[in-house]
Length: 501
Image (cartoon, rainbow, N blue to C red):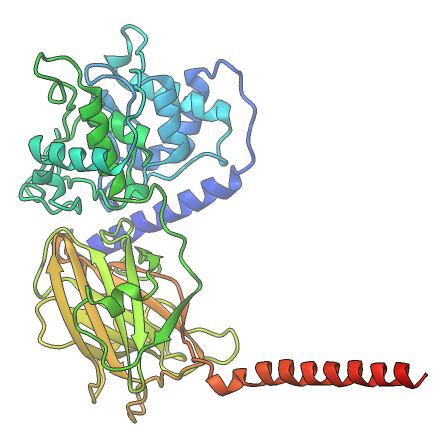
C-alpha cells in the first residue's frame, strides 16, 4: 500500500469514528426501555451500536478506531479490568462495570455514557461484556470493605509522605506525584503496550475516581493488567496484620496532592499591575501573590494532523504587568523534558476583534490572522509568529518576545514577557482596560506531538486591570463633608426659628 493510500485509509477511519460517535450520541440520545433483567442479547445490540467501533465486535480491543487511541481500548477477552472494588484475584462486580460505562475513563477516549444510555441499557452492556471472558463464570465477586478513614490532618499527611517513600511510589509517580519517577518511562502493561503512571496532582483524570475512597480502593486492589500492584500486603504492621492507619495515611497524602475535581476555568485572566520590575523566578512573592488560573486543553481534532488523546491536559497561568511590559507565567505537567520537542504557545488575535468575532481557534484563518508566542524546550529564545491556520504559521520579521524557563519535578514553568506596545505593526497592542481573546496550546515531545497536533484550548479573555486613581475617590469624603455641613446648617436654622417663635 503506497503512502497516499495509507493516508486515505487513515482519514477514512477518523471520519468513520467521528461520524459513528456523533450519530450514536444524537440519533440514540433518547433512552429506550428494556427488560429489567437486562439480558445479554439486548446488551449485544447496544454494544454493536456504541462500543464495537473501539473495542471490536469480538471484544478484543481491535475496533476500527482503536489505532487512533492512546491508551488503546480494553481487550475484554482477557477478563482483566483495572477499575474494581474487588481484590486482585477477582473480576469486577456488575456495579463496577456499570460505574465505568456510566462515568467513562477520564484521560482516555472512553466517554461517559450516563445520560445517553438508559440504566437498563448500561446494565445490559455490562452483562454482555462478561460473555467475552470465562473469568465471570465462577462465584459472584464481592466488593471489599473500605475501612473508616483516618482524619486527613497535617500529621496524617506527613506520615503518608513517609509511607509514599517507604513503598517506593515515587519510582513511578515521581517525588511530587507528577508521573516523572525514574521508572515512569520504562513501563508496559501485560499486553506489552507502553503505559504511563497517573499524575497524582490531577485527580480529576483518575480513571477510577478522585475521592479518598477511590484512592484507597486503587491502592488496595491495584490496577489489573498494569504495573500498578495491590499494596494490601505491603501496608501491614510488624505482625503482618492490616495497618489501616498506614493505609489511610498514604491515601491522605496522595489526596492532598490534588483537588478531587478540576478547577473551574475562568472566563478572563485579570492581570494586576505591579510597581517595579517583574521577577524571572516563578517562586517570587509577586508571582505567588498573583491569581492562579487553570485552563483545560483538549485534542486538536478539527484539522490534520488530529490528536484524539493529547498528553497535556491543562495549563496553569498567572499574569502581571507594570508600566512598560506584561508577563505571563505558564506552567504545565510533562513527565519528561524533551529538548527541541516540547512546546507551549499563547495565541492572540493579530488585532483587537470587533464585537464577538474571533479568529478560528486552531491558529487562525485566512481572514483572521493570529499572533502566537511560541516557546520550545531548549531554544535560546521564544518566537513570535503569525498564523492563518494549521500549516500556515510563519515567524514574524521582528522579534520582541522574551522568555525564561525551568523544568523541575515533572513540570515546566515558562515566563513570557513583552512590551505593552512594541511599535511593530505585526504585534497586538496590549492595552490596559481592554478585553482581548487569549488561548493556549501545547505539544509533548515524548509522544511525538508536533506544533498543531498536540492539545489546545478554546478562546478565553485577558484583561489588564486599571488601578483606579486616588483622585476618583476624593469626591466621597467631600460629599460626606458637604452633607454634614448642610445638615448642621439646617438644624441650626430650625432651632433659630423655634426660638423666634
